Image (cartoon, rainbow, N blue to C red; front, side, top):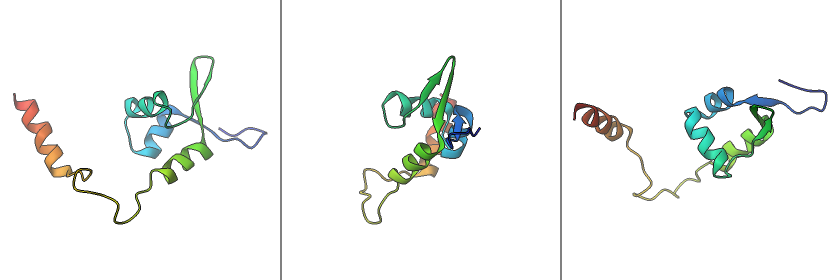
Length: 86
């Protein structure tokens, strides 16, 4: 989705796929001001350069995670299974 101005626009589905998140999470990033987005009529577009900058800004520096921020995917899967059984 390029243009003559050199801006490459991404739709929300492509942006969510690139980030590896659900569209709902992407809309939350936009709503919270973490990721700039633009509305053109009824569609929302994001600049590829700003999405790439967002990815770079989310980089975790080595040695900066503490025990509270670590996420165990196996534990999360167990939690999802347990909640679906109740």
